[in-house]
Structure formats: C-alpha cells, structure tokens
Length: 297
Image 1 (cartoon, rainbow, N blue to C red):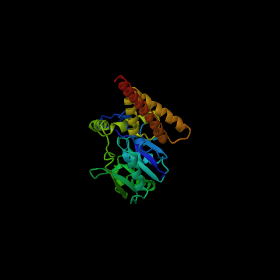
Image 2 (cartoon, rainbow, N blue to C red):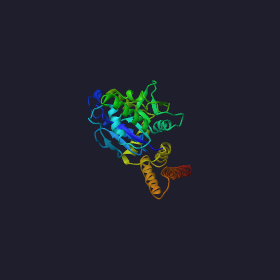
Image 3 (spheres, rainbow, N blue to C red):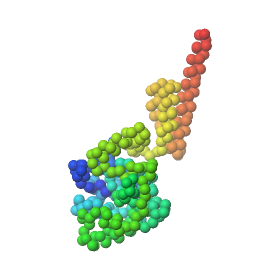
Image 4 (tube, rainbow, N blue to C red):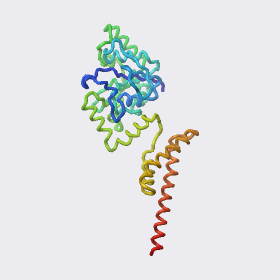
C-alpha cells in the first residue's frame, strides 16, 4: 500500500514550558523517533517543524509563518506529498505501533469496512484523534482549499474545522495496543510513559527495540529462544558464558545473513546449535561427576 506520512512536530508545547517536545526521550529514544518507527514503510515522510536529528531520513518543512496552528502545519506537510493516502500523526505518541498504523491505512483504503475520506483512531474514551489518522489525500486537499477560501487563511483554525467536513471511519484502539493514542502533553504524561515502558511485561521488548534502533538493524528477535540459550550457557558452562554465547550467536547469524540466509532463521538456527552444545557440555560434566562419585565409593 502506497502512502506518505506527515508528522506535526512544531507545536509550542506550552504545558511543557516551551521545550522541544519531539526531542524528549522515552526509553532513551526521542518521541519523534518512536513515531517514525511506527511508519517505516511511508514512501515519503514529511516532518513539519524545526530540523533536528532523527533516526531515519525525513523531509522537513514548516508552515508560513511558523506557529500557525495544526491545520496550517498539515497544509504545509501535505504540499510535500504525492501518494493517494497520507498518514497524519503528532510527534508525541510514545506507544503508537505498526499494527495500529496498518489498521488505519487498511480502513482508509477501503479494507475492513472502511469507506469515505479516511480513517481515524478512536481512543478508549470514545474520542476520535485526528492526529492519529489516515486520510485520502485528495479529500484533504479539497477541504483545506475550501477552508482557506472561506476564512482567507488557515492560521489558527482548529483541526475540527477540517474533520467535521470529512467522512472518516473510526478505528477502535485494540486490547493489544490500548495506549496507541496516548500523547505526552504534560510532564505527568511523560513520567507515566517512562514508567510504563519499564514495567515488567514491557521492559524487554522496549529495550530490544531501542537497541535495534541504536544499532541500525531491523531483525525479528525471538527473545524467549535467546533467554533460554543464555540460561543453558550459564547453568551448563559458567555464568559469564551467557552474554558471550549470545554475542557469538549474533555474530554467526550476521555471517549467515550476509550469505543470503533469512536473518530471523539464522538467529534461530545459531541459537539451536549453541543451546545443544551447552546441554551436551553440561551432560558431559554431569557424567564425569557421577563417574568420580561412583569411583570414590
């Protein structure tokens, strides 16, 4: 599915004291980078706001004059797009994920019962979120042009002036991603997001995603398999063997992938071989211990 993405990152963040909100870290990753990670397949990604370092290349633009509000910013971003669908996101969504983005795009394209001018995420409180939505580009251009003609300018106009004229399919937040629409408007929101990713059920996935982004790799990681391997190496050989073994597995998988193997399968196969070795090592040591004990008796 061909789509462009427009991410609004130029707000004043008044409730945060005017800080550069998209650059604030959650789990050691900037909020903007977390949003960018949710839409890696966009043909063109446009960020409306001041330039800043990002985890992947984007196209930058700004409404004229700056500070004209979300509708003016959206119009500026839309001028840089050409795809029939445009994903529109705010830059402060720490828990937005790829399946949610895909659901919005499918609904906007007419799948999953979608029709009309696009699809909008509906949060757990039943409120539609126009900055977590996928729109038909032609419909956006049409309504924005009408508003600009009617009001003489888009400056200061709220997004509801636009969305009220569009037929949007609601996409309900799933149980798997109930926080997809959670945004960081206050310091309390930011603290809650940081606490959430460090909860027991989330921390490993969050950490693995952060490491992959930091290292510039995109490979499916079977966390359970690697943890089982680390356990076998630690118990069957020695505790320091765990991190060293998983490092060697990663190195071997990289070599296999460079030769054309599927990266995920390469990790699984290298893990299986190393785990089998650790179990054989442990069995040999146990057999020797039993033999010595029998001989001494």
